[in-house]
Image (cartoon, rainbow, N blue to C red; front, side, top):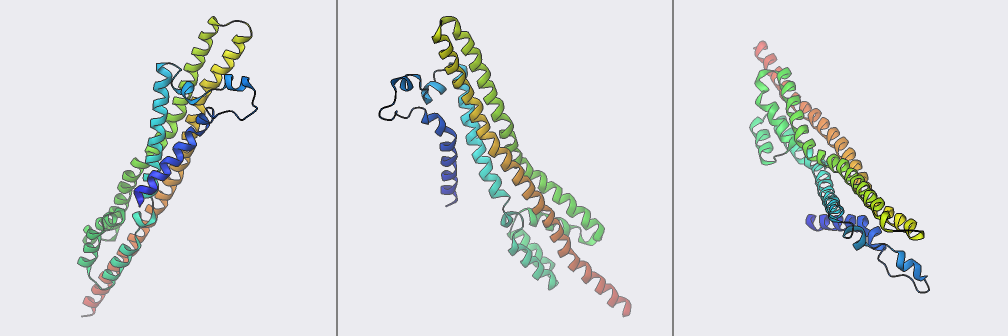
Length: 258
């Protein structure tokens, strides 16, 4: 089911990105002036007839759009609450610690690998060193999990920066070709050729921005959500560790009374 959803999202974005280009190839309505058909710019002309460099740039733009969709879907899946802070792990560990069963809490973490379980295990491994050491180890484990998660999310930021640069590169090369082609035209045809060439060149910038905007927006949202959930995980782990700390204090108090 997840694969189907990913494919549907990918196809929807690909259609959104390329729809303006294909729209240029649509057949003219009945009664339309013949001039509109002659001056129309189609997808083939925009992508394939601008030279090898232009086609290569378009290939990179399409590749960046596919990569953006992939990393966006992956970022959304990785920053889900059930992925970072699963409720069943918190409940299972809390129940085990309330019963004084540290081994049971460790077993719950081992059976449910993830960021929360990793942070919990860092605290359990240093439980005998004191609460301050536990806090430091939990903080270090949280930072490590943040780096792992942000490495994947940062690819969205990379797509958001590369796509408009590719679009600008395509526009610049298109403008160079447009002005170079003016030497072979004269009179009114020169102005028409220049306008059409510039129109074709600007499509790369449009496509680059269509990729960059959702990529940067998705990057910001995923990063903020991941940061909030990881901080909440750290607070949850420290709250769970307090149960062991309270139990240790009670045992020391009972030993002193005896």
